Length: 209
Image (cartoon, rainbow, N blue to C red; front, side, top):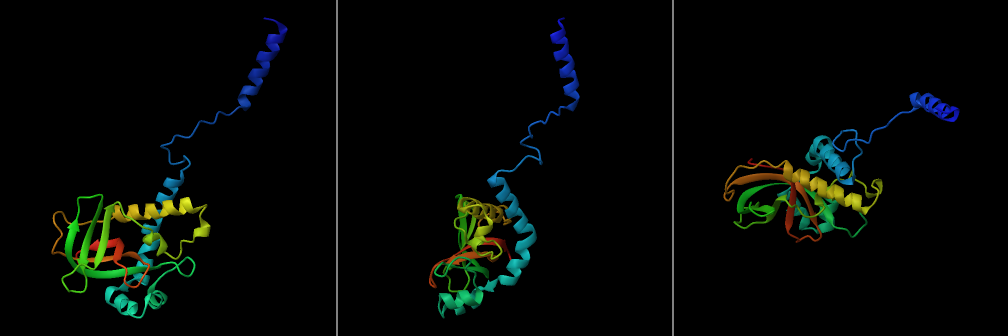
C-alpha cells in the first residue's frame, strides 16, 4: 500500500467517529412533520375536545328566541345573538339550540341530512347536515376565537373549515333505521345571509332529548 493511500485511510478513520447519520423520519412516526391537512385535522380535534363545549354552551340561542329576534331584522338578531368575524356586510353566524320532530330523513347519500319541524306546524324548517359531506363554513365562522390573520393563507383557513366539518360528522351518534317521526335535539352552527334564509345547521351535538 502506498504512503498516500495509508494517509487517506487513516484520515477517514479519524473522521468517522465524529460523523452522525441522521435517518429520514418515518412518515408514520409521531415525530414526522405534519402536512397542512394533518395540522388542521389536529387543530379541529383540539377545538372539539377542549374549546367547543363551553363555547357552544355559552353562545347558543334557542330557536324561538332567534325567530323573535329575526322578526326585528337580521342585523338586530346578529347583534344580539350572532357572530360576524369578517367585515360589515358579511353573513351572520349563529350557534343554534333547537328541538323538533324529524319530518324528512336522508341517510343514504354522502350529503346525508335530516329535516326537523321545530315550530310544530308540521313542516320542516331546520335542516341538519349529517355528512360525511357537510357543506359550508358555518362552524368555523361561528367560532370567534378563530381569526383569519392567524393562519398562513386562505387555503389553510379553508382546510380548517373542512376539518371541523369532518369532526362534526365523525362525532355524530344516531340510532339505526328511519329517523322520521323521532324527536331530536340539536346544537350547531349556521350562517344566515338574510333574515328569511333557510336554516341549515352543522351539528356539534344531535340526540334524542
